[in-house]
Length: 261
Image (cartoon, rainbow, N blue to C red; front, side, top):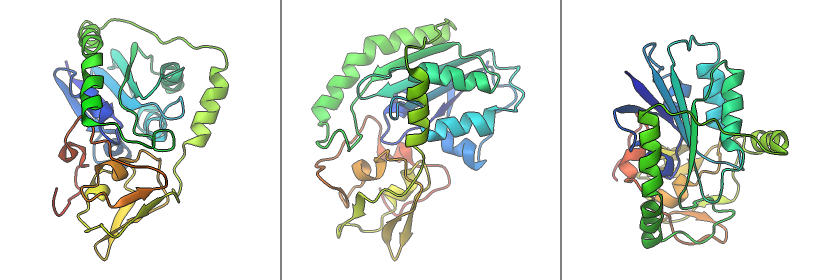
């Protein structure tokens, strides 16, 4: 049985969850979207693990379903599960996933969500401490083991929708599209190490004269801000960095290099 997990992650919360699923081959969703990895024909089980964006699916997850799953022969997929991570609550995000997969002719078999530290700077200006991060990981451990058992046994748990979910879905899908983030800026501490460029899920950061430069495809995951080793990225009103639950080296996208980590 071949299990592949497609994970979208910025600061690492969703990757942390994905790594706990036994015997799974994990790939970043941006690998699928750039064509550097293709879902094998013999994939029996597919997991989609991602953070909640604006009470809905992140733009890359919608694109993954639309470009990489829709139109593909998915008859071999016997079990599809989705796991969402969020700083507060997922609302109808898992039903949004179920509906989006249904549009591609795929049935979602199981959905679950986990509350983990919030790294979204517009709502969380003060970074979560390492002690708080450890406490949050401990708080979900029992549920995580239960979800893993469910997935291993291919349990069924279909997320239900609630009132107003279509409106929330529409607002989420329109409000989280890539664009220029004018609130992020590079300060004088930048040494051009390339860490931000190597972990950006959108490939939105380049180096010019050994300084980081932002493009116009930001989805506000804030991985660059939180994981910069020199604290060289500013966001107005924000202080501290969320160091996450996985080492920064595990967030490097395949094929991208950095001078040092």
